[in-house]
Image 1: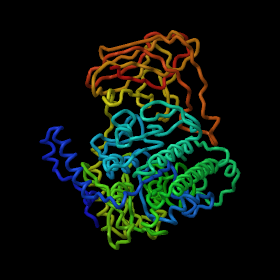
Image 2: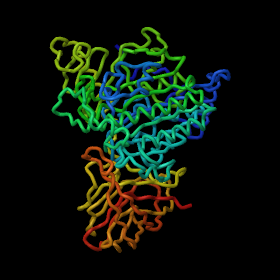
Image 3: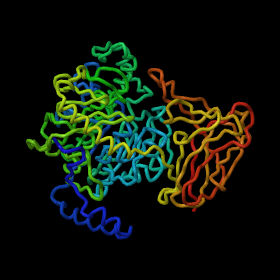
Image 4: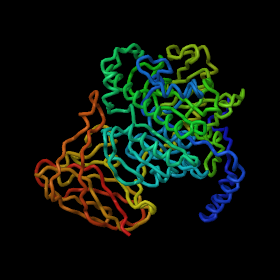
Length: 610
């Protein structure tokens, strides 16, 4: 068995950490440039361009939400085609929830190493010392882009444009409150979406592919669905809403069939858009030059048919962490190839880098291994290994045959894929060994999780910083518009002593123009909004009522439970304030409140003034 979780790594940085610590930043930059040039010269081949990469990741879609895997409740012909013309991985593992999976995909390392400890309020941010797959491919000369849900940091330099993706269109939050033409972001600027998000993100991906058809490109398409709210265009819902489901969750009494129908309709919409990508590659004659990857970010977001596995999203059992993985590269990867060895999202960076002949420079030791030898059919190319799953201090571990769950129970996944019978008493040596590995993994990894840190402001290369309600902490009677902080706004703001705070770190001091996105009825006009940090402050009275309705529910196919509705908030300029370099507490307060209805706030915006 592979000795512990991080021992195999094909790509090494040629300078030791000890030496790097002794170099000045200028010397490090020179060393990086020099080594990059050497590596790129070694792998350069004028007669053969590097392949393009398109990676599509669905959100909250389970292993069983694909007709190729045996689900007769829906039809996913385009996704299925990737498995038929390429390779499918029988046991591929992601994390139980969104942000950790994305961090592991980006870095090839277990998410605690990158500090990712949650899915909102800043806990989803990926440490700045991590090297991402976007940076790896960008450094090799690829055009890089991400279209969809990022979920690993909002403020620069956590933003995708600062993590190797030259183009970004989508949202950085963990989920969005409305999927039809909502407010989004393009390369750091707020914009209006165009239609249903899955279609909209695919439209941008298609334009990116066309634009870069004559050079190598890396296109990351993290779809926002079937994450709730359960919204989908009529043509998909109409053919699913009255459908008699033939296949159900293990515990049928826990299944909400309308939720299942909505989720499956959303998956069929994803499938249609996967087909659009594949047709565009054919049209541009790029299909044979493009690696296409399809996967999901965690288990299904409800109890529905999932191959008889135990657990769903949030669980470290098999059903919470097993994802489909289909990789297609016509002419290079054998059609219909089945790979039985266990693998994980941590393997995608080294795998895609090796397939594309791209060096991984300047990064840290990876936990993942390259699966390229398996794709080429090399027998015994990957040694026995373990893959660890973690969420909320619960850890399980998977070997080729066994899973040790978070309670220390052992299951033979070959004989008992539903995890019904604890075999620890029959296999005491295996159970003891795996418990030991889990304890070692916890001891090394869990202290690396980052519970809190300030939000970065004033990144020199990007003048605008958004501080959404999701990242703020309400005080007094102020509350969020919904239980889940993502996409929420602050409401019930009626008292002068009520306020909201954001811990910030100003990366480069300077003068900033302050803007607050607000809503209020006529009775709250003349309420004063004040933003302060230390001795710096600026304020402005609201002079215009802006009281739009909360929207989004009209698009829901089933009632939402935790996701906030959304509003069209109005920007109000508060003036300018000087923020020195360093950490501070940013406070938005209402020193004067008029009326009894209060104000609502979506975000604070800080724009550097040169």
